Image (cartoon, rainbow, N blue to C red):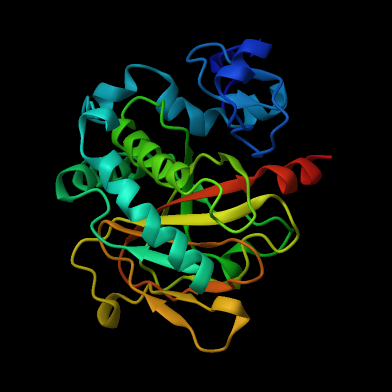
Length: 297
C-alpha cells in the first residue's frame, strides 16, 4: 500500500479540462464521472480522491518524468499527418464498412507497417517490464482467474513513453472517422482509452463472452495484435469469434500488426483460447452516442 505522504494532491477538474479531453475516464474504476486529476502530471483523471490514492501504485510508474529514463522509453515522435496512414485508412474504410455491415467483423493485416508497429510493440514491452499491468477485471464479483487470464494497463496516449501507442490509437480513430455514418445506424462520437493486455503464456485465456451484452454504449470493438512469429498450433491464443451467435467459430490468429474490428454487442460472442506464449494486444471500444447517453443516465 502506498504511503499517502508520497501521493500527489488531487486537483479539481475544470470544464476546460473536460472539453479538452472528452474521452476522460476515472483511471481506477473507468467511470466517466470525473471530479479530480493528478496534480503532478495533470494526465490521470479520477472520480474521487479515494480512487486517486488507491490507483497511485499503478500511476506512479508513468506519472514522474524520471520514469522515462528508468525504463529507457524512447522519445518516439510520430505524426499521422506526415505519414501515408491517412490515405491508407481512407481506402481501408471501404473494406471496414462492407465487412462489418455484411459479416459483423473485419480483419486488416499490416495495418501500420513494420516500422511503426515495432515501435508500438517496444513501448508495450517497456510498460510490461515497468510493472504497471494488473489483473483484468470483470463487471461482476466473480473469480476473475477462472474467466480471464490477462494482465492489463489502461493508456490514454499522453503518458511519457507511449507516443507510438498514441499514434496507433490516432490511426484507428482516423479509420473510424472515414467510416462515419456508414457503420449500421451508429453515431460514433467517442471511445475508451487503450487497454493494453498481455496473456502471460501460462495456459490461460478468456472464456466465451460478449463485450457489451447490456447496452453500455460500446458498439465497435477494435483489437490490434503485436505478436511476432506467432504459431497458433504451438502457442494457442487464437480469438474465436462466433458471428450472429453461431456455433462455428471464425478462428483469428493474433499475429503481428493485425487489426480486428467487430460489433461489440450480442451479435459477436468471442473467446481467447489458452495461450502458451506471451500474447500482446491493444483494445479500443468505440461508443454510439445515443446508447452511451442512455447508459449514463
